[in-house]
Image (cartoon, rainbow, N blue to C red; front, side, top):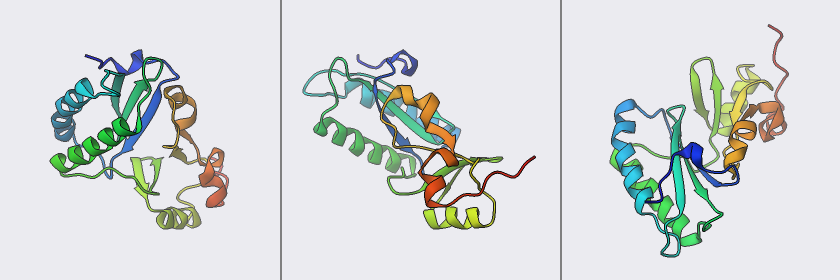
Amino acid sequence: MSLVPFKALPPESRLFIFPAAGQLRSDAIAKATPMIEAFLGQWKVHQQDPIVGYQIRHERFLLVGVDESTIPPSGCSIDALTRFMKELGSSLGMEWLDGPEVLYRDSAGVQGATRAQFATLATQGEVDAGTIVFNNTIQRLGELETSWEIAASDSWHGRVFRLKEAAAA
């Protein structure tokens, strides 16, 4: 089996981030876990077993890491992963985001908004340059701790939405 603990993967591993459209309930996570492990345990890249791990974070994101030092994922294997994620979402009665939804953190947890909604929140002062946003474009496991959850001012969000500086506490 090629499935390893997520933390055992090297930092240069390829990272795929699948954000859920809403919070993953504990029963959905319990149902999804064996399905994810079964798929990743038999996932093939050019008829070889990649070294792969996964983690669910913040009850909102499924992270899949692949150690590319042995065999990098191919177009076909990435397509298979994407198909599996759609099937997983269907079986759980939920959807994975693949569009321009903005995911950010507020006092209630991880929130999602369309770009238009996020712009309105910015205008209303409900989000600002200090708001933590999720940069789901990162591609390496080592970037998770430094470049995934970042202040909006350090991401494209700060430029696109012209966010105001955070109010002094």
